Length: 403
Image (cartoon, rainbow, N blue to C red; front, side, top):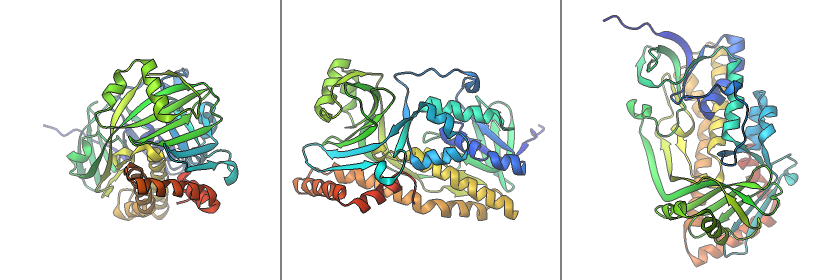
């Protein structure tokens, strides 16, 4: 049987979602200046996003974008359009139910236009894919990767659409449920939080004024993020097994339960959209680089949503991989060579470790039901609110403006 001839590409990105599409857009200057050849493989069928009119939906899933991430999208030439559907986070209010301690962070004290933004995922996807449509990128959709095999200095990818690619660098950006890591023998460390995140959009009776809330309760944190108008994105963390009852409640009973758990800082909860739930675990890939291979986004790390850092961490990975590839092209190094990939890993390792440690530590600190520790947490929140320099330093790190 005659072997299928493989198409040669410099970079093959497996996954055309937010992380993979962001990487492809970030590579645009290298495509234009160096003739970099890029292929994107996405398994899920997608509409012609570039030609589809935006249809806002009350139930649209959203992501929190740190100010640093907004600046990264601005550098790609995308932020002006993305900002059309963005709700600015101008203040963050952190509290613990039943305790007096409160921490407040404001954009004004950091001399920033916003601490971050909340954007519908579908809108970000439209903006990213409109940009991709302008670039000479090889697009395979819908297409899955049936096999990825190390070959030569890169990998040979066999796709379900009949194509075969020979890539100098393959980037796994296909999320946390892909079988490709397992196929390649890349193991992950996984620790369940025994919690579930219940996600929905809600309407509140008072203007939210751009305030994002993080409310720690005995069952888990409740986050409310500002959306346009008087809508807010809800992330309600519950003990595993408790979500079924909340999903089964009628809207009125659900809103009453939420009111009881959160309180009345945003007034009355008046409306709730479709509810979704997913289990929470800390998952980290034991390898993020190999010869000819890099792992990004949820394929590399899946975090608790308590600090809203998952996508922002992934986007910094996109920036660092792009910088490492630019350096390789300038110096004549192989794109998939370990010198290039170690450069990428060196840029990532401290940031990744600090964010994972911070997110995981926050969950575990507020998850310990101890009277003495609860008083210490309350004192800590009060102290953090009073001690401006420390609060501002933590805020700038969370915003992605410092590492």
